[in-house]
Amino acid sequence: MKAWFVQAALASAALAGGAGSPAPAAQESVSPDGAEFFERRIRPVLADKCYKCHSAQAGKVKADLALDTREGLRRGGHSGPAVVPGDPENSLLIKAIRHTDEDLEMPPKEADRLTPEQVRDFEVWVKMGAPDPRGSDVTPPAKPRIDFAEARKFWSYRPVQDPPLPAVKDRAWPESPIDRFILAKLEEKGLRPAPDADKRTLLRRVTFDLTGLPPTPEEMEAFLADDSPDAFAKVVERLLASPHYGERWGRHWLDVVRYADTAGCNSDYPIPQMYRYRDWVIRAFNQDKPYGDFIREQLAGDLLPWKTWEERNEKVIATGYIANSRRFASSENGIQHLIIEDTIDNLGRTFLGLTIHCARCHDHKFDAISNEDYYALYGIFESTRYPFPGVELNKVPRDLVPLVPPEEVERILAPHRERLAALDAEVKRLEAEQAAARKVIAEEGE
Image 1 (cartoon, rainbow, N blue to C red):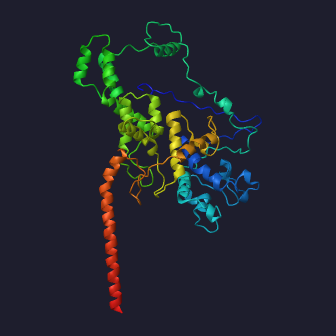
Image 2 (cartoon, helix red, strand yellow; image 1 turned 60 degrees about the horizontal axis):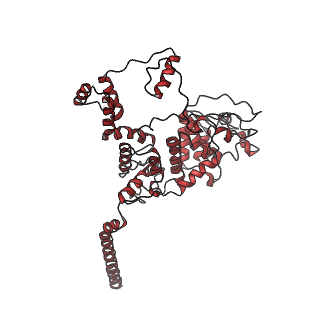
Image 3 (cartoon, rainbow, N blue to C red; image 1 turned 60 degrees about the vertical axis):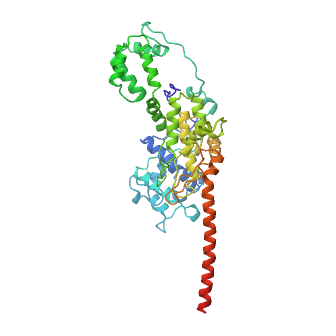
């Protein structure tokens, strides 16, 4: 596994629509963050709450306000522009969805009103400048925007193959096949490789790369004094065997999977158990766990076979990857579909190098991922029990998995159950005494 972290970035290809489709309108400059915020937080709400009256699909667009294009949103309807970018207080759309003006309340039905969280999303969006990556044409193309059979021929979906080694002029310089590719590009540009680094520089580079720490003076002296042909190989093996290797490179993986010690909801409640997943990742690197096992254990460790209780616990801890999904809202139940969306979004970025979450509302515009593919994944995580980490209003976590055998769980809980039974009995006795005392007071009062 020590080499898999060097991954090639997967590219995406935009495939054109059918013949005869109108030319797309000129796009305003929209940042990637702005486009993502619109696609995840704004467009789904517009489609769900507004399009039935204010889009091409409505037949007759009410109030001449079309919200299914960027131009229609900016132009507005009979009352003027729907949004003033950067100014939510003067944006008619914000006033309408707040339901604070009885003459301007949208959607009109109480059951369709936006949630407070959705209203806040629109306010944030307008403050951002109302970024909108849509064009002006909403007419369905003559055929699907993506031919999935053709899209799956894109290079990133093809099986990995060994390409032929390029020819180079300096046959003495390459020491590995990778060197041939590097040298071929250098020669193509008329460049020469830099001279070999001296031993002192080489040791500093490899030590920082593999452990994130500088070499000690003793390590430097030992390497400078070692004239054997495998001196550098011995250094690399020593560094790979260091516990600092997993600490250094495990951090890269933890960044990718958005590791945190808190739940990520409004209150960002702490999760004291998450350190176990962090330490599992570090151990996986240091143990040179095969990448296939590394993936399977994080996604389904609790379903994999095991021989010892320690092995079972390790695989359960690995599923902390799923348990670390961002939580939404401060209620006890949270907003489950957004939690699952976060899981699927990160799964795509982490394991596939793809942004899957676009397919939550429609077939992906660029990659060969359909709306059906998204909900096939959704079904898997919908049947997954996410642990409840606790929130401000209910700080007691639940649905955690014990990391001890059932008999040990029973041994730990038995005294508490006995104590609870004793307290229940005491409560009943006190309630009986209370009832008797009240009866006496009532009789004496008469």
